[in-house]
Length: 203
Image (cartoon, rainbow, N blue to C red; front, side):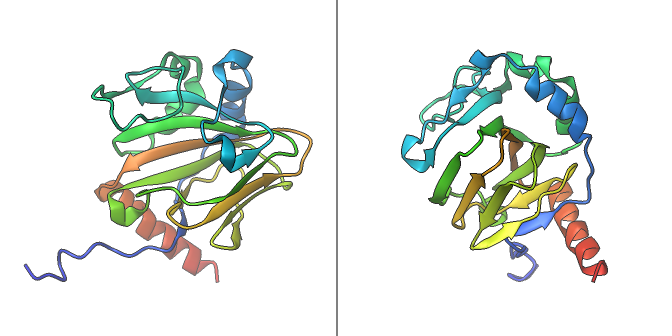
């Protein structure tokens, strides 16, 4: 085996996976959560307006925090909120990777997440982030490395959030995404490769 055989594949900073999800059913789950299930995001300097989350999988299975405490020795586990979200649970089961943090992230009307980077969440890090729109519209925009990503209904996107990104919602209703952090495996690598092939075939 050569060093080239051991090289990590290089993917674009955004790839739409070849999967389709029932966004309407997931929206029913998300909108049925109680107001107290939504926790304000911990990075208060990063946003203006309402940016909050509902933890579906967290350290210790706790639904009262959306922050993955790096000092904790407790294992990742589903929270009680996931049991209230059957359509979202079914969507997660189709993502055949081990998962760490799973959250619904809500950006309220007129809110924005300021430009920032996340840490060690690209494919090459062995753990990466997937975004699934749950409640959205044309007024919500996710901009990665200066270029917007058109996340359509039912999509699932790999987004390399090691790169600078920001999110705005100029609409009148909240924008909600299912944000899933996963460990890289063969299934994900194949899904990314197939996603690139599909995108190239459209041109």
